[in-house]
Length: 95
Image 1 (tube, rainbow, N blue to C red):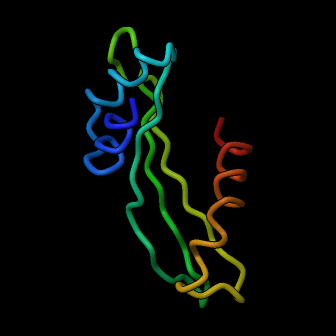
Image 2: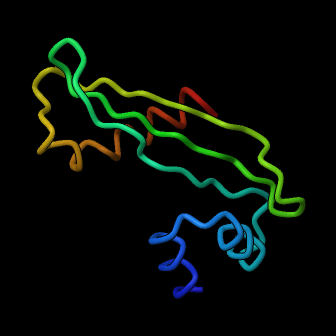
């Protein structure tokens, strides 16, 4: 399972995500990517695209594109330390 998780992290492979989901008994898996880091009106923005896929059928059941605008005090070098709060906001607003 550890090897599959590592491979999944590097390849973003939908089939591998589904296989890992089967191993752990999940109904759905979430895959995605960071599609853009930019600036808008002096604020750093981060755009994430996610797919929720049903493990049993392999069908994507939901597609989400989410853009987060950081406070003006956050520059590109501080994004990583803020990702936990971005993830919480994403779950709260999109799921």
